[in-house]
Amino acid sequence: MSLPELAVDVRGLHKRYGDKRAVDGLDLAVHRGEVFAILGPNGAGKTTTVEILEGFRGRDEGHVQVLGEDPGTAGRAWRSRIGVVLQSANDLSESSVGELVHHFATYYPSPRDPDEVIDAVGLRDKVRTRTRQLSGGQRRRLDVALGIVGNPELLFLDEPTTGFDPEARRAFWDLVAALRHDGTTVLLTTHYLDEAEHLADRVAVVRDGRVVALDSPAELGGRRARRAIVRWTEDGRHHETSTDHPTRTVAELTARLGAAAPDGEVAGLQVVRPSLEDVYLSLIGETADATAGSL
Image 1: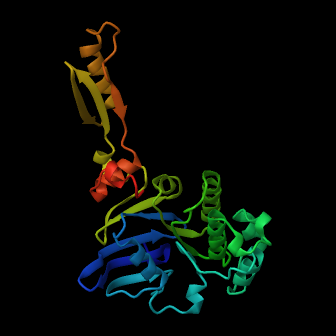
Image 2: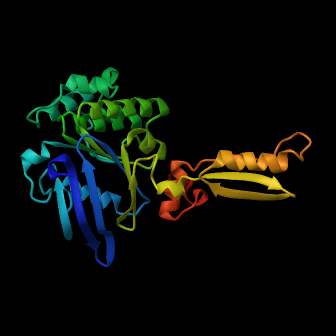
C-alpha cells in the first residue's frame, strides 16, 4: 500500500520510561477511511502509542507518520486536520454546551456546522446548559462534539462511550458510522469488546508494547482460534473437541451415542463458537474470570 493511502504509518516504535519499555518495537498501519480499534490490557502501551500519534508525547525510536507528517514536528495546520476525544478533559464549567461548541469551531479553518454537531451528539435539549450541570454521559457527548467540530480527517477516540447508557452508546455508534461514511478515519481505543466488534474494520491487540494480533474482528486470532468446540457427556465423563467441522462431529456423535439413548439425544451436547472476548483473552494470556472486573 502506498503511503498516501495510509492515515497512520508506524514502524519500530519505542518509548521507555526509565527501565520500563512502554512501547517495544510496535508496528501499525491505519488505512484512510477505516475505523481502527486498539485493544489491550492496562499497561500494554496503548495510551502511550496514541499520545505519540497525537503529537502529545515524544518517542525514543521509530518511524511515525500521521496524515503524511511526523507528529513530533508537525505544526498548527496539521493539528487542525485531526480531532482528539480524550478519556477525560478539563473544561470551562460555566460555559454552556452551545457556547463551547461554537467557540471551538472558531479554532479550525473548515469546521462543521456547530449546531449540526450538537444535534449529532444528542445535546440539542442541553444547548443552554452549563457544562458543570451535565451528567457523565452528557459530558462525554460534549467531549465528542468538541473532537469532531473541526471536521477532522482523522479522529482519535479514547474510551469514547465511558459513562454512556445503552441507548446513548448505540446512538454514538451510529455517529461513528456516519463519520466513516463521510470519509473520516477513526482510531478507537476501548475496553468494550462489543464496541470494537460493531464499529471496527480492523482490530489490533497490543500486549507488552507490541502488536500481537491484527485482523478484522471476525478473523482476529486466525482460523485456529475461531474453531468450534463440541462438548458432550459419555459414560458419565465430560468430553470436548475443537474442530473446523462441527456439523460432521455432531452427526458422528449422534450416530454413535444417540441411537443407544432412550430419547435419541446425545447427553450434554453443546456447540460453542469462540467470541471476540474469548480470542482477545487468549491473545493477552488471561482468562475471563481474571479479567471480569476490567473489561
